Image (cartoon, rainbow, N blue to C red):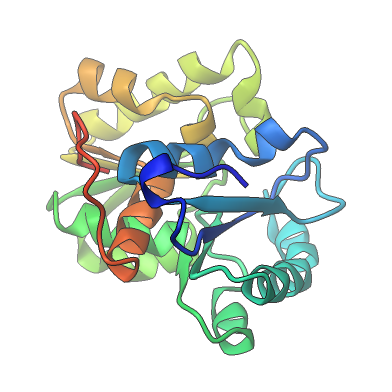
Length: 232
């Protein structure tokens, strides 16, 4: 577990990664982003057996019981709240029933933030359709969804062609009328694409990891950390 020096005494936020990795630095990537932005301590763990994460209905179904089991483990070791770091919000309701602490889904967190920023929200993810949890929350403010060319799994975003394909798809969403973009894959946080999209396209871009961290900060008594760009 890595902790901010100013909040080392606090109970951590548990971050559940749905991408399996043996590299502790990779597993802790999203937790580190939350620590740096909001000054919250985190502990990150990943589910087993899914090196390409969640990218279709079958991989989501396989992941759900693993997420619930991992949530129980994190609650037992003292996590104050949990973040499921996947924009599909897999096993969100099951996990909430299984543990006695707040559980935040990255997708629904991003949708909530996007609703506060825009009227026409474009959703950029790794599936052909927007995640159902995101789509349901956006309601009539959902404009369109897009998947970057050649990207079918979160690991595809790490390829050299990944970021340019993301920019192309995002450009298309804005051209179709979106005044806010929602990144519906937490792997888009991993590649750090949000600042580039905002600079090139001139619209707010909601990062699901940062949105989940923002909601976690409310349940954690807020944060005194000062950030240069507080918008998720």
